[in-house]
Length: 414
Image (cartoon, rainbow, N blue to C red; front, top):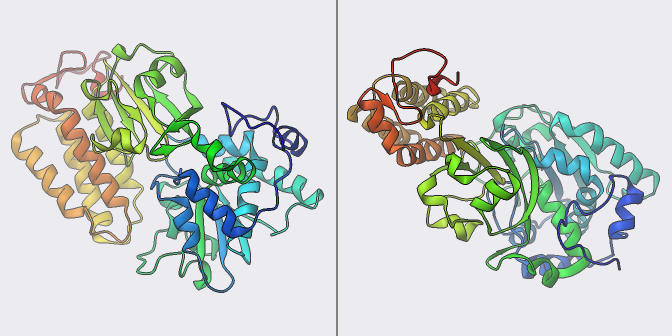
């Protein structure tokens, strides 16, 4: 067995070819399915796609005839780049994870569902694996459309079946009835890459770094008001200020808030994220989660309400338009948030926004309305001072009149 990597782990290989992969990690060992699931359980691996569900429980729930395994790299979230980067930098580790998971659940069909940007690197890696006789499950590539909701589990399943990549109102979990009615395991590709490493190095190695209650490493996409954008691999539990300063190359005092978890995530003002760690336990008290590993920084000269309005507008446009909360609720909510950011804020407007979030929350055919409502509610908390300033006709970001136009107005992104 090769020497276990310290940090980075997922990105430890010096190249992306199969030869580079084997030189660093060696071949994927043969491991009994029950033993692998037990090792994943002992490791405490949780999903890296957003929901954070325990991976071993998800795998153990897949029972029945002719199971299907899906590696999900649709990555429709505009602020995320980690899945595409992983498939470019370490594609064979993802394929290892797919093979290991498929073997563990005795899969009959295996798919890699991926964003168009990741197709070339995944295709090349799969061709290498097949040439070396390692693609025992005949993994099929399915291209996902570049849409926000395309990565939702039921949307991925519907696309693989040949339909549109839209979420379905499911009453039965995918582990029982997924692709063409078969029991189906859907895992994010980063989760699968971790499985490829746990199969080699075991649970104790995986738990030797990161938050003790949410162990391992994670890929984080940094963006916004930081000097260094991109994807980094860090231990879970890393301080948010360390991400901004060490990895982002920016003084945390120049950041007024951060959006954790992406467009369905949570705004955290600077007054709260000092000393906060990026893990599920670390963010729980703030009502946030790491989501798909996204940290987006807002600069002190940017208006948080304006950025929220921009994102809310995008989410309203990107809805599946299959139910009332998406078709009518989210566009109306976006209009209200836009009025809050660019009109004159007042208490009745804020109350109406809160009412609309309650109306759409939990009533959609998928979780898109829920995530949007959560995001907007977090903005009302994080930018309470901005709302009060807008009510007085000013903006805290640059102390300019709300109705003033010109190049210095931070609310319009100019």
